[in-house]
Length: 258
Image 1: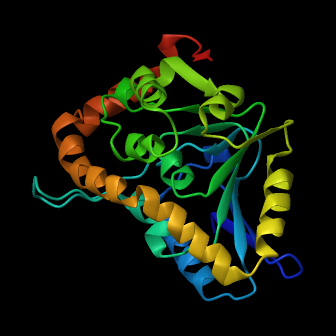
Image 2: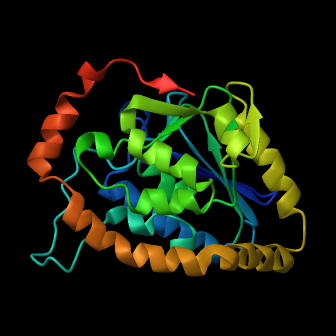
């Protein structure tokens, strides 16, 4: 199992942990399936009224899709299979609040998860970046998800700068991506405290509020997401060329943090 779920009956909070620290908590197909199944399971668990999502270890919250995974694609230019589209709570019709706790890197496909969390708590040492353009890939789903949380210029800069630049926790807080910055190692504890407060309120009111806030941005998100498959299909380099760029990633020097 690449996913751990600990449920606190006293607080009504589930702590969900991506547990692949040796892979920087990158998501393979099994992990994607486990995430989707867990969110659906939590829909029926009346003892869980809120959840915190984090990654094991301190190096990374999540680094997106595992580069070693091969995702079979249908032989049609009109179809694109993305296993990360179903890893978030909203994609699985879970309307209990989810708080993300970020230690270390959060990049690429991690934004599928951050985009469906109610808010984000981050360690002071956390960084956020989107490597897609560096490796010849379109940042579509990720950029769309972040456009619901960050000003246009900040999303565009992060998406276009690729691995050359990382957004610090302080900058992420300043632009609204992060709602609280903690000392290193403190993100999970802070997120659990907030989740326990929320879980103590009447659950129907809480879930209704989650739905209302999500509805405020859902129409624009849905329309943008509908364009994403075509943009990815047209703009991505062939997989072998992407792999060449990824293999050569060590030659670009240290990324700038802002």
